[in-house]
Image (tube, rainbow, N blue to C red; front, side, top):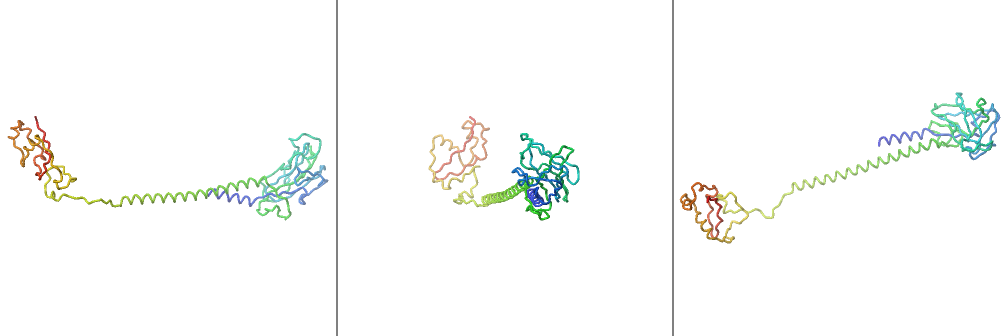
Length: 322
């Protein structure tokens, strides 16, 4: 975004500091010397509808200006027409004003629209003089003056007038259009950068809110108490009774009378006959034909819970060597 601002500032300064001023051949600041034919050569292809023409080899037209660039304007003809320009007394430049795209002719009006046929830029912002003459050494036969454009670098002449106050027609589309395009691109880039920054700010703010809401939900779940439908109950009658088995279930109520008595078979009676308040002796196992080595039993099977009224617990499984 900073680059866009700087670009906009530079382009805006460029538009304010530079502008072009166009001067017609009939302007009083164009000084004619020698024999000239002015106002009689009119054409829609000329700048401002006419141009000045001279056949005098000694004639000249001079134009003084203050600026940093100068452009020589002229139409083109389907037959040999030329002129010579000299800036600040330096080397002269021969200009061929013959239209290369037109069908050759022996005379007549112009065949190509007026435009810059020669220019010089990068000048110091001081007073300069441009002189248009005929070059007999290079076969010159004409002197044509249609107009001039010069570039001002003071940022004041935005209405097409120069420092002397004389009114001139303003043009300079060849340099204003690129500047305008650059300014437009800079403005669009700046606005797009601002819009993107605003959108990112709102997006980031929304993301922060969502993250905060998620954290609050997690904290609430972590700190919320878990409530039981009913408090746990304990069998008070078994509180002082030592555990007789390694696994004690609290899923059953202490009142065992609510369970129906288990059906007993003859085999169960034989097994229960071996159960007593004291462990069976070796004589019992000898009577059953079981060796003394198989008498050892786990510790948790050596004691049995007392029988309750109407309830006989299932016997513990005891491995036997047959």
